[in-house]
Image (cartoon, rainbow, N blue to C red; front, top):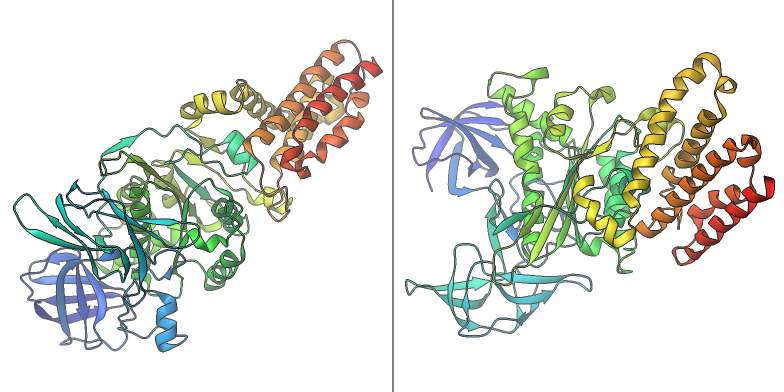
Length: 583
């Protein structure tokens, strides 16, 4: 360890000098209380350090000691159900040790060193192993099997492999490398948060991340391994959408990063997630969730680290072969932390005071998502789907954080406060939102759901866009001045909006809709539109058509159980019969 001393303190920024061994992003301990900090700039003999704890009381002359290692997270059994701050300090363990308030300089290991885990070996003594190969497993909880992997950079012959109960720090295996060195391995490994974990190959995402949210799955789907952003003003439902995605998304692991959010919002997450029953397993949702809680009243510098802490934990589970859904709420607060630190470093500001490298940092974060073939000889696949909420001031979509995010993500779910005020939820605007994965997912939907899935989707989007154009005319000269064909377009779009896109997150059935049910609902609407248009050509009144009893029956179908999908075929039959009856 090398020692230095403070020459300047400016909020979370501390400047020290005379530490020739220092390197960028090394972790240092600042002051007599040994506050955790990270070197973010080296200029001559001066080091700029962002401190992840409150710096009150620090002054010139106080000591600074470098650890010689970058900011890293501990990865191993015990991560799941954990609640950590931005630098992976376990909040529950801190609470048990010092009470409600986090004491400055407190050092608590991220993973419990006392708890023993039942290790079940999978490899065999004498096996030739490489980085990423699975040594054995730990049943971390009833839901998730934790796979213990050979750490990156180690390969060779397995000389010893134990079985039984061990802590994360005890030796469970010994590997003899090609150079003859014997490496002792435990169930825990460390990884620098700013360095992406290594994989064999990145693949194009071709399978949708099914969420059960109709507007997302049917109109603007996200692929497993894809990236998405949810920008929207206050009160438009970002948090509820993210809760829905965490609960229903077709993912094995959920990593939820509360980055700079209000304390009461994060409290709601901490209270609700343990109480939510996981629909996939029947266990509490928390059993397959990791929470990073770094609220707006916590040190601002730790927000910047929290994003990297979360994505590194997600990469670790991805490397086991799991599909991970990562929620970052919100990247705007993370960008604000970047802006504050950049200002204190006296860097040249970019647009609206954000640093010029904002777009690069955002791209680096989202690029760590993806579908990959992990290291190891078994060719296992894993994915990270990154979903970032953005909170632009006043809902301004020209905000630099929104624009920089849109340049790198491929799905945009634009929340609209006007829809929220009309009580239309999820308040995703179907005219401004888009997904660039539609083409990639075409084969999946065609083979697994229905051959005409994409055709129906295109028709629905076209009708909603046509409705927006006709609404301008209606405002000027009234609905009655439109032709019957155009009035039918408005009525069909209304069916799509109110009976298909509108969804109640708190209803037992309507909260989730399978892809098969979504297809049947959309098919019925567009079949009705096609047959009504034919009937209009035979001079049948539109009012008679839109008053058919079967339409009222359909409007209740969103509350129909998933095992009743055969009823849609009956409704289609009734539709045709009722149209014939009025001809």
